Image (cartoon, rainbow, N blue to C red):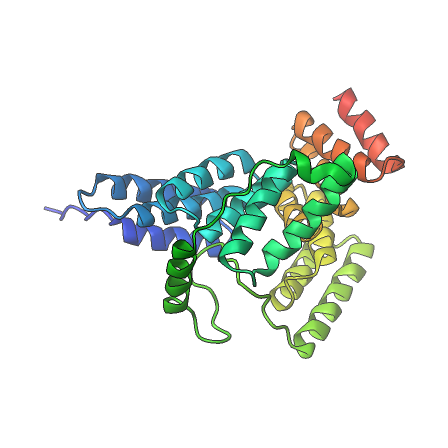
Length: 309
């Protein structure tokens, strides 16, 4: 008689979710983290922080999959269980930014900086939100902000000690999904130059109409230098051309995380939504683009095309 297969523990499911996340299988990661959450909730002895981390991991998967609303919900749950979890704050801030809820994004970025003033992503996000809010509300934009919660010194010290205890050795790669480094990884000149060459090879292949081969080149380039937004937008163009629309949206979101006003990312994201026949999302994306560049003729034509669908 065949032996009954043992069900996986929440820790095993969490690790499986992390592996799916690393390989870009975000939908699969969401499902696995959901199972892990259910398993952990069954346990009599469960630490709220463990459950908070699982919600935060699932939030990262939702964010990568373009589902910002669900990302916010999971981050809210995570922060109830694990107060002032930096990763959850940063993920919620990124989701709010993508949803154009800039005041709330600003608050989360500033809260994260109270915990660790060296977080590059939080500094960059704060600068982007300051620029966007100044353009939207003028010089009095700060008067319209929700209150920024004060992080108690005891909490800062506790989180700092925990971060130090869990600190990875220099140059170690992060083992947990969506890990936001407190500083940008150092890129060697050799890697940057090689990444640039691979990107240029991809550009040449695009001109020949060989989009699948170009995707391979851009992917190789991004492994060496994941901080170049134009490589993401170029690969997004290829994904749109081969009708891999969700992959295109993910690449555009990566570029927009670096620069929320990136015209190519906004345009190609709009194209991808149109390809998916998600007219509402397409129109929303085009409208964001037109607020950045009101006279963009290509965006206007795409909007007309969306209205005809």
